[in-house]
Image 1 (tube, rainbow, N blue to C red):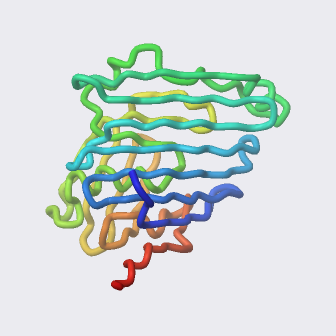
Image 2 (cartoon, rainbow, N blue to C red; image 1 turned 120 degrees about the vertical axis):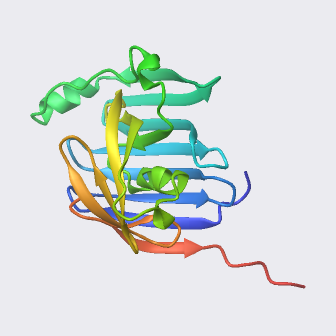
Length: 217
């Protein structure tokens, strides 16, 4: 993959933090991003995401790091099933306890077959991954009000625990798509390419950039 042509930057609304991603979306999505946050502990989250040309997720590689700990998880689609590998250094639980929070789950998932039928990954608190079902299902051109129930591979941050989650996406017309889970719902504002501009209560996009076309000689 050469130079990535587009950059997006969001600021968090639910906690001190931000996210910057560089991406190419000419033939599916390839993206490299970094998110920073100060809760539940101070951490950085670096990720690399790949879909197929139809925007179904193919791989997600994530690493989170904080003072005295680091974790990694890789999800990779192979022969129609998710393969999940993990790494861990230091003690995230000690950092969480020092900040007054409960222990975290282990990175990854005990039985990856629980993710069977999940075509999308969802990286916790990242507005980028909401774009995956929006583009895969072409929701900006879909029937208004028709809900789509999905099974996704949800990666919790900063623990990198992976769980199967049910989510619902509903096109509302124009630049609005409703996202809902069992306990949460939000009406997302997206641009013409399906990337999130406003995620109420969670994130707001503050900048977007596209690499200028090369000048002809």
